[in-house]
Length: 305
Image (cartoon, rainbow, N blue to C red; front, side):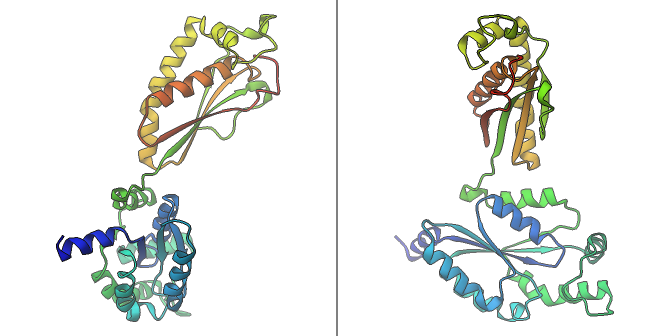
């Protein structure tokens, strides 16, 4: 093996460290939140002189290799001058990736005016645009040594988060959409929160069969009774088709959780049977990055189906 290949192989075995930096208001917190959702160990605004010590402590005490992210900006007076030397040291211990976020001065001024937050370099009685431009000049050497630079002037927070995720897709950091199919009874109140809700009270009701009244939709006899109604099969097929379309779209949009509500009168018979079957059908589709689970809110509460 050549020396270059050996070095590359060794680098792949190092833990990943992402430094998120750039201009104040350009989206550092958005990127840090996205990385946190991808199971990064995230730290923001550590004193510059403590960064190496903190990383040494965390990596030494970690039970397994982790991914790390540090957010830092120009408010630390040691950052700009000393970061090049720190980066050299960190590359010996980590796969270091420096992300620099920028935006136009007009957009940054608008963001600070909207949020009413103080710019970290704004002097008492000073002008916001002056502070922004001073930070731009101060941070230019950091931008030049970054591994990737994002200009967020025209980006929404959602789009910036997706770009951060795309950056690290190659290291198997795929976000998942956790989908819960929930049965409930309208008589016990509307399901909240929920992303989609469907009323199945039009289906034939096992509650009125004396042999089924005290059972629930998880019982094969009750489920069979419900699905003897042709409308139940039609409803199930339409729900599967709808969510086969919706779930990948909502995953792409950036959602982490999605709740499907199936309601009947008491939340014990029809909604439970439909919920169990819908969850099973959706899970069998093996939609990428979609995790399906089931919950029955009112299974032990009411007797009306």
